[in-house]
Image (cartoon, rainbow, N blue to C red; front, side, top):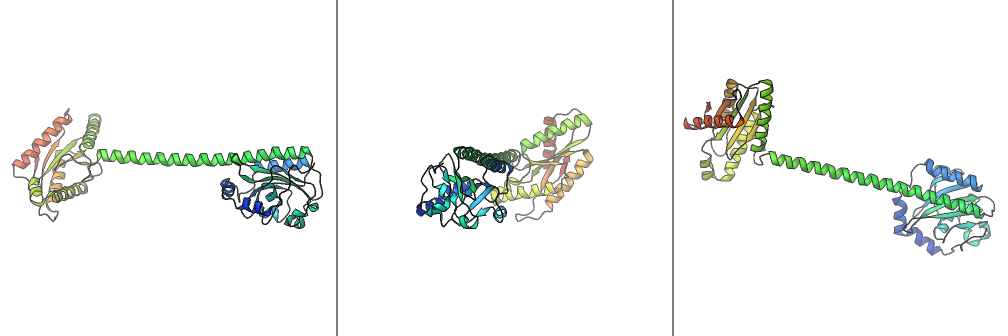
Length: 361
């Protein structure tokens, strides 16, 4: 059959197409440049060779300065290894043609005299189907080559055209898979971010921002859990209520910044003196609470004394600071509100007795 469209002889049109940023971006966006052979593409070139009888068939992706062969059947060395070709190629002419480029004998056309593969490989006949995206970008071509003059039949061109469509679908499928993977990664990142934000919000909801200790809400929740454990295992549970002595005087005399520093110091001292299972919280302005699981009255008193002494012995820029502590141990069947009330009463007793001491109730 005759060439169905004129062979473009305008070098400028080829150079413009090779350098076109949109086209080059589309080629590189396939993600196939410099990738290893794949059976799904090799199956198409083998089938093309079998159906047309052409000794060489290939899928060419035309980058700005080279042709990369994603699949090639029948190519000898070094092309079989390098799988790319630099310099002018017949695929460049196919790229700027209006449809299939079908050449029966390239040596009979002066425009192809300088195509290197005419001399280096002995190419005489060529049939190429442009691989055109839905956006009109030419990625390359699906080609067949013969080393002797050849009259390509209408069936040959139809076979190559159908296989070119199949190759283009394979390219589009890989892009869709990559986009899906990228979308999944972005969704996973967003979910991780949401999870981080939820954890941060949960921490804000349960943490005192000044001292980093648990707040009253978190402490009440922990107490409810511990009461449930006590009910099941009959283990002892004690509660310490602590108050900073003369805290209002510190704020009035030295300012609220100094008062905040005192509260932070006490939070650090209490945390340092607590066990892993103990629960330390700031439950009010200058009030702290310590929940002591598996701890009876004597143990609670000893812990309270250690904490009281640790605070009193901690040097500070604002002079000596002391705390008063009320220590109570859970009674059989006692509710949380009653435990709190008794701890508050013991704390009041410690203050009434002169502060900087531990009182039990």
